[in-house]
Length: 168
Image (cartoon, rainbow, N blue to C red):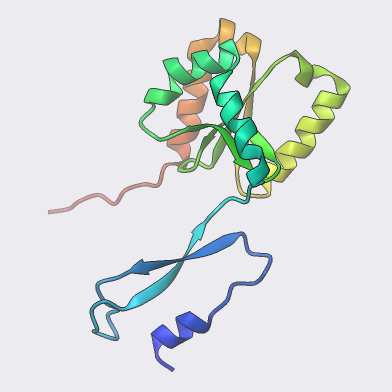
């Protein structure tokens, strides 16, 4: 069985949270035939498509703290962030795929016993996707904005893949 046939027959286990995407490759070295296709597995986060209209609405009507963090920092950040990203059955405030980071801005409702229990369960679900969840209060955004930005920057830089150095 050649490599191409093997790859076409390979199926990931049903519990895997990956989706197949065919990628054109110039050639597989052992095959030597240009234009062969190889299957790659690219992480795709599950989401409830019924949440998309609500996510769009939340993008349109952001809280003042979300708006401040987005327009004054994350929108211009060198690594791409998405706002109000649907993941599983939740809508996250901000998500960075590269850093596998979720940034949540918590208002007063998050500090009730029900709100804290909900956030704890939500965090467990998001962490099951290999994501790190960091939370800031509205007060943090209002009073300690530079600190919030530094924390996000540090987490993103810590998770950046190290590029190989070029030697001459």
